[in-house]
Image (cartoon, rainbow, N blue to C red; front, side, top):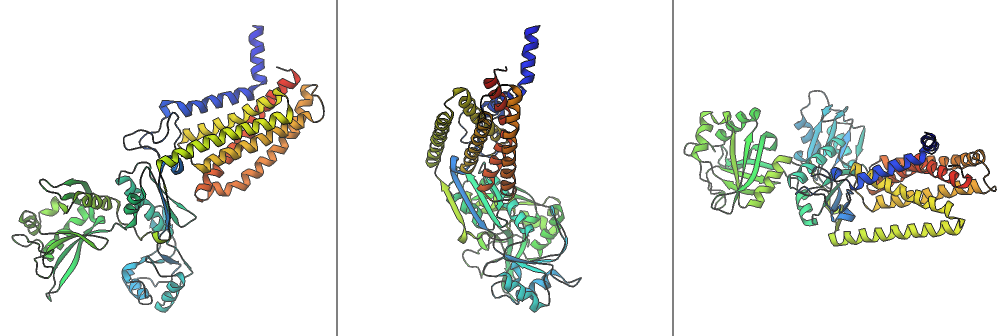
Length: 533
């Protein structure tokens, strides 16, 4: 019983060391346990359900260490807030009047939003936005004044609501395209960053380059005999979009669509009004002679006609009878399967509110073989840093009982940080590795401060002497830690790209050091120097 009591007393006395051991063991579990391996729903996972580029551990790697493509570009457009528009003024009127004062924009390029809720954002003033290139905030302000609408502020970027919409659409596009592990985020306030592991830059650029606006239009003659296009429906009129399928016995593709119930009646009437649902159906000769054809259905994406086809009597009859709206569905055909897949993706995701300015973009493609070299170089750099730190510490103290625990304690911080990254699924990239190195550097500095303070005034004769010196050292490293956290907090909170990962893990390392590893090292050093076990 005495031995048990002594053991328990020793554990209570050195509980900080026990806590460090427990946290290190938990971190090792997070790193290597199969139960915490990344799933198909986490960033860095592949389409077959296995973790991408994780190897023996549960770590997930960022673009530099896994290979893939990063594209970052601003959205095209400018906007004004606090626009003074008289109550009851229709949006189309504002659009036309503002467009009259702009040389490089039409009414279709202008959006007007009155105060209200838009998704998760509450807009409190009227916003006028121009979603096209070659228009500046100053030009928009001048056009508003000429139209009689004063604005509080104008900005050389799109509005926050447009930005949020674009991010949502791009995320849906990436997911619908099956590009596993892809992420879309905003950095610097107005730059969209799209990252897709294990994908080449051509595939990613083709996916996001167009707005993806898909329209189903009727090509027909008006009362004057002139051929015109009338939009029958767009992606907002659809309730369900099927998968792209290859046409039986042909090279083309098709996509089944179901029209939303509240739009079905209007869509049906447009088919009738444009002559698409005429008796006997229509035979489309748009490709052979656009000015000598019966009414055609045009499948249009970003103003580009992908396909033109007629209407079978089997579809026209229920349209004329008003029965089609009870089961509003039909199939869109394309010339090939890849085009059908592109149409399906854009119909599901919707259209981007404006284009990405890829002319001013920053594109990065990391070949998987190069990312493997980055991993190897990072490992070599880490080993070299450990050896260098170990050499300096031993040269400084020439006492194993002081330097040994110092090195082990510093390395335990790295294990804890890696375990935390694995547990939360944070992708490891070069900036995070830099955060690890910074944490090691500040950690060893603090441990040296502790050792110097404890040993600088001669031998440690008792626990009381040790505790007095240790507290003085801890106040110094605590103040330094607080300064580091305050300095890096803005980088951790703001969307500043890779700097955010560096700041987060540097701060996490500092917190782990102050709360766990430094106190544990103090207990170890006290036991070794005073013989108090």
